[in-house]
Image: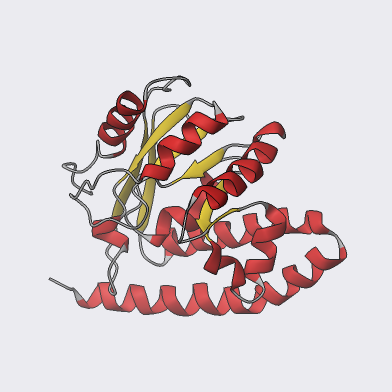
Length: 234
């Protein structure tokens, strides 16, 4: 049931976050054209502004369980809402997300994202697209950056656990990197028009080594990223 306070908080959040994004996007986009390295503070500012609005306008706290990954690994995460997609630069150090190619065509922030480092995912992920993703991801991993992928392929309602997309196992094999599974339960609080206060939990599982058979890595990742499906939100 939606409470009046949820409506007020959500309206304040929408106004502050989206107006702030619209005002700062052109500034950082111009700065990034002059110096591409400006895309890093620009992306971190945007994610930080989002986290600030989430915490102080929506009343949502964030809790992290497990050890935060770093360096050239694949973080395979649950995707319940836009919260975790925007929050990644706050959560991890200069992560490289796999994101829909359409997002890189968003005015200003799409340009910043390309310079910051994003692996574009084409909807028709055939062999050619997979090789292109592998080449881009391998380049970022060689720089010591952490790769982040949502292996279920899209946002999934809380409590549901669809099978992993086939492209995940292909990238796991091609990149030959260990995997750190990440569960998150943002859906009940954030993936709704009138958002609710509470606590969103990230849970990082044990590192899964590279080189495992496809069935085994998929089973282990699938179980770990859905570990919070039955956990409530405070």
